[in-house]
Image: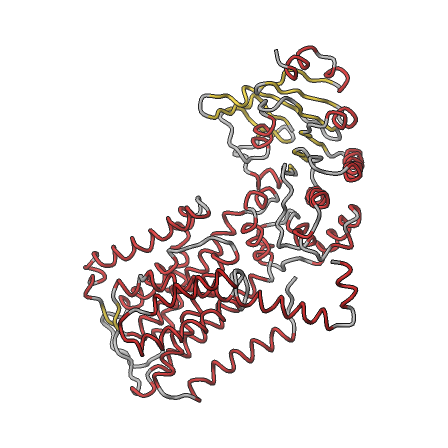
Length: 239
Length: 333
């Protein structure tokens, strides 16, 4: 997946200014930058939640004409959100079944098809949430909800997963579980774009790191290169 | 997870069996008349619940389609002499489908906004419809109203065919509502109600799903409006596009339990007959509107989720305590 020259203005402020980022399959790309540098805006454009004022989004080298969340989802581009509240009245199995990409006419089929239920149980098993399958999501702890949300991305058979601060408010054990899953999926060829404030996780996990500063990438490279880049230190520490 | 259970089917048989027997047990026409309005509100409440309960969109222009259905039927029978009581009931079916189709562009326009904005804008649709019906006199005859031809039925049994037609419609709309609840469509509507952005992020085609629920609810409202117009025989814009009917419907859904299968029906069958009875005994004073407001406030204070969910939960809790596995359940929660 690639974003080329993406520009987004809010009023007179350019939140993203000709921003280009490329994400390769089987790699974890980190997106870091100080507050207000445009990370979340970039995320929202890439996932179709915000329409860009300029620039294009490409998946597999093909331009996505009018990116909407649904269209990108069908192309295997899935995301998580910063906050974890996930349909409190639905059961875990229902939420995971909802995340399966299916043809439109399936909406007139059963609420949860047998095959989807089996896949949901399998994913719940992998996440260690199997015993809670029939619970409503509102009854889960915060960390469990974030894990469940990550589980929804597994149901979609994704090719690119965009994670928006997946570790915010999550305890270290859950972070380890999450990290294990990301590593495993990476070996299966899934690409990740990770927005994260916890820099040691970014340095540990990412193959490439892109640093945003005021809506433009100011540095990119391996975690080591980036952490020694004077431009990056400058952007983070002010100047 | 809701499944077909013997218990659920048994409940439906008991409810509909009782409703079917009612006009033959109490054959006095005024009883059947009151019961007719009970069923009419039950249809409206169950239909409104599709968009207002399942999807969480407070669609206050809903009664517009009730009025359009009423006018559509009355206009199509303007110069007809009825030889049988049943033929207009058949015309109601294409009217319902046609108005459901007509509601789709309305849905696409309105569903761009959410929450309180949607509620306010949608209420404006109802007022706009009433103003149009009052002033477009070449089609609607304006505030002077227009009449249906009188069907050939004995006066003492006049209400019965209308009651039975409305009962059929209630069975259809309730069956549809049950089907939605156990389909993926229902799951998606619940997801939209909880968090529409999230639902979009999971690939739910939110606009299409909302339009389906919206159009279905409008189509059923139009059919109810058609039966109503035929029954009352003469319709006026202020009664066909009535805000009172609108708020009564919404209140019944809230009272019974928003987003549940049986809640709207329970709410309607409790409130509508009481309202009709009071209107008979208190005359035209509209005092019942004050009782309405009081009931609404009491519901919000004491039964914020409505009767059906509250009763259901307390029943489940009691059964859990009584059951052998009760202690285990308590430990796990």
